[in-house]
Length: 414
Image (tube, rainbow, N blue to C red; front, side):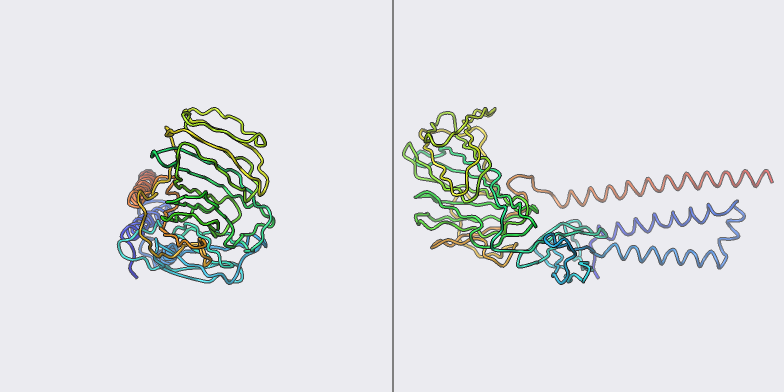
């Protein structure tokens, strides 16, 4: 079986450290140097050394195995019979099925030249896939949940609507919706209507980023114009926790825009953000409160929107935000349609009455976290391994030297 170069180097380092440990244990068990030289070649000592080496080799081999336990968070017990895939990037390098205790074991076959630090397990349960990063030799615990089409306890923790005019004849709208699944017992809601988006007339160049509670996500691009009354339906499973939908689109603009949206879930807090040079007006039935902002933006806030309540206001004027929330990776021009496989479930990730979306994969945390460099992570891990090796070597060397000088002193006095 081929293994990565870094993984092999780590094992060699462990073998060297183990050799020094065996030497130290072997030497510290004797009283003086002469006794050490006599007992070193005895059959009893050799048998002990062989047993220790075999135990060490077994431990090293176990370090190449991915082990873990899958637990059903809905029923509160181990989950048996779920398929588990071990992934490195987009490549499957091993698979297993959980046993009656929910445990699984995978012996990965790592291609030569790849890093063992970018592995993740993918567990499928009730048509939903749950992913978690793993490491060789470290036990993984994965929580899965039963899925249902109707789940109580869904609400919107936060909704943000941001407006600015980057072009003279259009206004750019960026929205963030944080949907909280607080069901009990916890369940994952599945279905095409998990998030319905009714865009205003004339909306185009819609770009959606979805971030799920486990940190994984996807992006969808709709380059066409949305003039149909039917909503965009984003059917990403709503797992227990917070699922974030971030979307941006453009609307035709002639100096003023009436905006109207019906809340799909009850919203705890809704925020409107626009430049100071633009004007905001809301009906008397909605009580927006001004919020101070250090970036110079005009911020309005409203609390406790009920389910299906109508959010309505009007903006006018022009302006650009000094610090606008924008999605990294959003296309500057309409992209050509391409077909990809979604990474979360067999349920379609998005559907619309007559528009077919373009879907592009999004790395976890792309819109909010810097992209990690696998080479840098591997280098840091190697440096840590060498630092541990040097520390253990110095410690053992000090102990051996101290024991040797002490034994030599006793030998002279005798």
